[in-house]
Length: 429
Ligand code: GDP
Ligand code: IMO
Ligand code: MG
Image 1 (cartoon, rainbow, N blue to C red):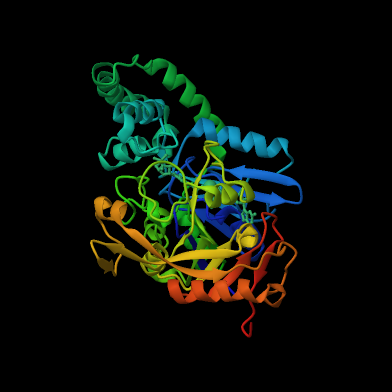
Image 2: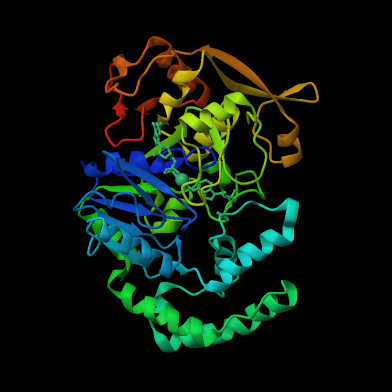
């Protein structure tokens, strides 16, 4: 049956989206990214082979799946070419199965320099970005001075856009940030080289997706980051610069909202965060270290150790509602097999009262005291489980509690990083 399924992360990213997308992509003809850029790191493990995808959609490992980099993505052309080359070197076909939107914005050298310069300027108050130029590129897009792939492919247009831009950008780099100016001629040459190599991939992806919808083809929309990093609804300003939530998908692909049939929300069975910003259930202690060790919680993009903590049910309820989640995929459940007792935050206490909603104010969020509900652990190996009933009763009990807290049913459970370590719950489970 033709279906448009939208998959989004419900926490601070790294929920295991790449793994689930890869596992589901055999059921879809198209996999399309709609936001973010190379700040994403989506891991797919097939047998002992591990792939980390940054810009190329996680459906690429399924031959025959068309992968679309949508108009809402900001793409670093050099990084994209490196990723394509690395995949090809490992025997993955990348050709007509990859389409990059002509409306996607190009990450330019000054975006990366400014990302890092602004972080060092902020010092202690830094966001903890991935340094991939994401914020400055989206800022230029909003300021209407960005360059899209459509312009990059036309040398004369590209040159005039670049000339109009670089004078001001270099003044900011030199006079505000005290950096070296960038050489416009060198950038032009470098990016014209990228343009020629990427030309075969750059397409009108809006037309491709609309044709696909007309032909009844199935589409999986791949979210990057997580809803708590969303520009509008996340822990602002400790967020990324795109619309991560389900609402970003129509804008970032051109697919009308009414054509999205279902939303699958992906969450970890606990929480992690990379970068700065409040994290009420963080466990900067032995429990957090055990999660980090068992879950191999180091950034896929930057290698930074991820901050770890218990599942935050208040935040999960908030993001489940924001995304209109129809079903949940709960991952890394095997990581919790080591714990005798598992905590879930079901309320925030602040100034002697319980908050009903996830607060906008970071000062409030930073001051909340999580109220925990405790669940017995199962302390047995679940990595071989392939059916819901293979899971020990305490594990099923924990998943059912997550359903109640989040307000959506659990459809998938991931019990290991490998493609096949995914349980799909049947209707009568
Ligand atoms: P994404 O950004 O949401 O795609 O997630 P990442 O790939 O950045 O991080 C998820 C990490 O957990 C990766 O190292 C995955 O290989 C791994 N992973 C995914 N699902 C599971 C799981 O169920 N169990 C375990 N142990 N690891 C998992
Ligand atoms: P995936 O798709 C986890 C975080 C950064 C930083 C903040 C802003 O793999 O889940 P940015 O470079 O976007 O300006 O950084 O957002 N961040 C992520 N954290 N997973 C990601 O992507 C992330 N992408 C950005 O660490 O805190
Ligand atoms: Mg990741």
